[in-house]
Length: 170
Image (cartoon, rainbow, N blue to C red; front, side):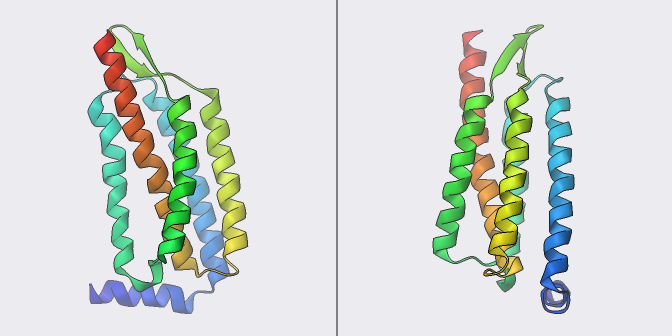
C-alpha cells in the first residue's frame, strides 16, 4: 500500500494537471466508445439477471480510490454528483426496454442510447474543463466516479425491475 501511495502522490504532485485532464479525457473517450460497442454486442445476446447486476458490482471496486486523500470529495459535491447521476439514470431507465425473441429476452436496440452516450461525453468534457480550474484533478475524478456510479446503479436496478416484470409476463 505504501508504494501505491507514493505512486499516487507522484502522479498528483509531479505531473502537471493539464496532462492528467487531457489523458483522462482520452481514456474516457476510449471507454465510452468501448461501452457503446459492448452495449451493441450485448443486445445480440439474451439478457439475464446476472448480466444486469454484475456491472455496478464490478464498478463498485472503484470506490477504493477514496482511500487516497487526492480523490476525496466534500459532502456537498458528493450530493451534487449523485443528483446529476440520478438525472442521467432516469433517462437511461426510460429508454432501456426488453423484447422477446426466440423464447428469450433481449435488450431492445435503441438509437437514443448513442445520443445519450454522446451527450454525456460532451457534458462531462465541458464540466471537466470548467471545473478543473477550481477543483483538483483527483477530486474531480472522484466526483465523476460518484456521478457514474449514481447513474449506473439506479439504471441497473430499473433494468432488473423491468426484466423481472417482462420475464414474469411471458
